[in-house]
Image 1 (cartoon, rainbow, N blue to C red):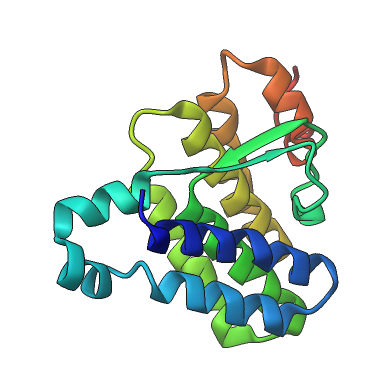
Image 2: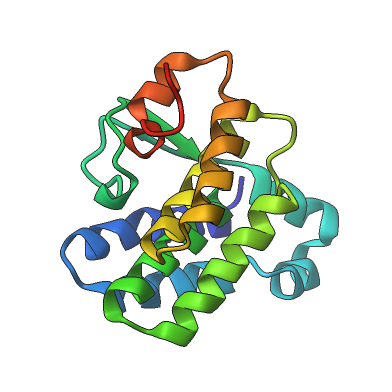
Length: 179
């Protein structure tokens, strides 16, 4: 790892503190700053594409008994793991949603959909894919697109088929899964 990686990860851990304190504008500033540090253009100029890919893939965001899990997720689990890019896009969506920034909220939702469907840096990890679909379903449900939210939640359930305890912990899935 390098100092830039640690700094970006630190910024991503700071953003939910502002979000939890209803300081959404500050959270968005922190998220924007963190994401600006790991765009392909900026990082690849200095380190090359291969090092950039290692940089972005390095750590997933893991909440263990954490008070900074966004309450909107309705999770009753001790642990929730998500990729940093999905986490940043989802938190950005939540901030814009609560600020009633309609256009920016739509853009954040579109980014979250794109990242989720192209499985951006998720590899073959079913739990990372499922957490991405769960965040997407939550965002769609908040936007009152119930049909699309149910599709995302169904995908979450399908991915977590072998982990029923994880399904039970995600309260938004209770209407879909009979676990």
